[in-house]
Length: 299
Image (tube, rainbow, N blue to C red; front, side, top):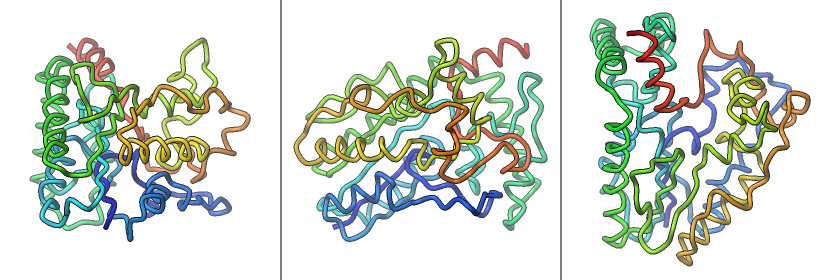
């Protein structure tokens, strides 16, 4: 019996090879909610396909390719990321967050970032350049909030189907998708992981996201974007939903409003700073509202 995970950075470790970390700090990755969940479920191992910066279509594709290796005795966790992400570069399923490779608000492509992310791989660089241009044009001229919400609903329905087929699968929303009526078969699901993550910060002018971006500069050094205390709470909730069909209530019981600029170092498990990556990178998308504003500003 194994535990399989699919999704984005809420279920993944920071990729050390792409970072300049403060090596005086060692992230205790064994405290991560998914490894705790493995032990609590009695699974022999965790097979984790979560990838920072990935999209719903890449997650669905990975699940479909791995399905022959998954039995109905195994447990499956699927984390549903922001639906505004799109997988345009086949070789780079972690390069789907437009905000990482498009400058805002001018809409210019950050070719230095593309080069940085692909330099250690034998890719067709000319092909990737064309794919990146298509991604940029899609973001600017095609994508809209209504389409993204419908797309998120379609992916949720796809995974919901496997629950009705008898797979031990749980869907966890990382972001709010209002058009999804039922995330899981047999129990209710409310809230989202991004709210847990942002509400850990003491708000600035009643704005949690402002506190997050101001303090972290977009470089979230928490394992899975959550503090260790909330990892413990999350694993219990997922376990109870998987084994007892308990409602998955992600908007209550979590520790809130305790991270400030003064104590951020205590929770920055990887010691990440704004200079940890070449150029600016945001570990999480700002969502569909930001993309709508971006398109309006660049017309």
